[in-house]
Length: 320
Image 1 (cartoon, rainbow, N blue to C red):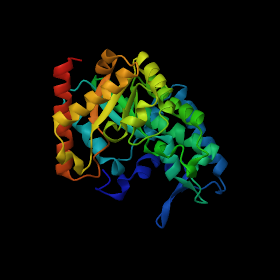
Image 2: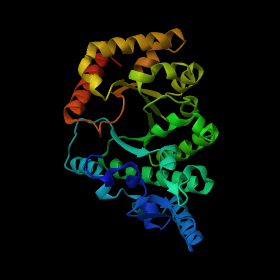
Image 3: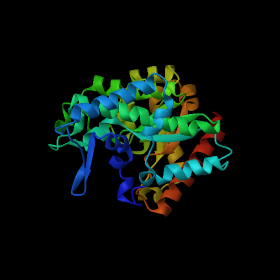
Image 4: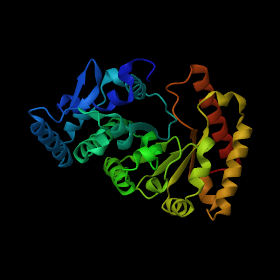
């Protein structure tokens, strides 16, 4: 909820473990950064990897070191408090969210203002930190006897292929995502990924992710180019989460019928390209196109109302 306080910003929500262990420095006059020049840098790195290995070896209580800081994730803790009181009794799943390694790695720098993602060691630390934060979140949310889905939010992947990011490598990105996905699967959670723009979708479709959430309102065409990968993804029971409902003021010029018409047109395109209609209609979730943390309250309410209406009408029509 970035409008509440600057502490709710993307970086602050996910660097707390790295600050506690001394790998990331916070100063009042600049953004947080890795300080690889500090005299005890090697000791700090050794401590981090020792903690990581101890958790992998079964010391799961240590996962609490990777808990979200309360001052930076008030919405998460309000949600957990509601769950603890028995809220959402009709829920079929509980959804959590974590940032992605590309998104965080391109925003978090070293002491020289170089993006941490371009340093192999710093990138590995970021990936492992996110994986453990994801596991901690799955641990917290799985207490309520409802299946858990954790989404990896990766808007940074829209940079892939752009001239200023030519050093981003597809195989590395897919491997890093799989590290986080494997951790979630071992924690008993389903893994989703959300990208709110166009990208090289083969990176995602060829990963181990269970659910792909894409902006179907603006970027359906970019996804529809990856037919072979989509067919394989659906054959392995992958779920397409269609971000049909825009999270902007465009919402006020739309109706459920208009969005359903658009969805059906998109289905026709995919069916003509050899995807199976029954799979498309059974392996589907209807969602907003992106998050609503930065929009006005009336816009957010409209987004969720319309998302529910579209989903229920499609469900009633297709009985999936």
